[in-house]
Image (cartoon, rainbow, N blue to C red; front, side):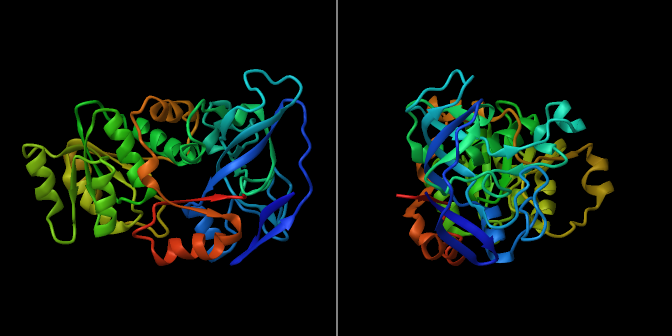
Length: 354
């Protein structure tokens, strides 16, 4: 079968690979659409970073070295059902929660499997991937989506990231939240906040991304922090009280400071973005003297069902976030390169094998 293989920095190849064999407790899936995300971009442009294996060092759970099949944000259709599998049938539309965990470390035993000491991802660390004609996945990681369009379903994985972050923040209906950054995850966070009846303010310097936030109707207010005073804007929309919660979806140090400044006393900053360098904070002034708190999240655990329900109920509309649909043959030029060259105008590019 055909698959997109990741060999390393700027090296993707479509090759024939061995057909995966169905096993007990698993299902065989024909992937439909696969989203390209930030971690894929880092792998392609920067080379292997954990949890990706290298040519010499295998991933501890998959046992695989490079090359591996790429793709972890994907939807598909069940082709075969293994022995002992219940609740899924041939022809069902599904998404895959693409984690591989050991199930024995302290985090896994507590149910926080997203914090597994050896955690890896299908489509990054081995065990196949969404950019292939077929994949076999253990049933516990496969979620039915009903009649949801398969292109929308391919974005359930990043939506689950947003659900996990929003729920971790303990934000409540009727409160106000500020989202710093209107990239894919920032827009997803805003869409979940709106679904939970939270007044949502997005801060984003890119005009194109602000337009996406406005046109997709995921924000009540959109602010340009370069030409507007974010603190004053938030104060004007909160009767001078400030926001109860803020979300860092930008991963930039200055944004962290801006978001802390817009919080009300006893407010909370939730970090969902990854930071590539340390961030300097004035703990006493920005946190302690205001009884504020900070939290952060990574990935998801037990969040896919909620993400699916938000879409199926109509509370979250993922269609505005799909900016391109391409074939695997064009993944480099129309996928990875376009996301770098047009990062302000592209949100989610979906890739199909056929």
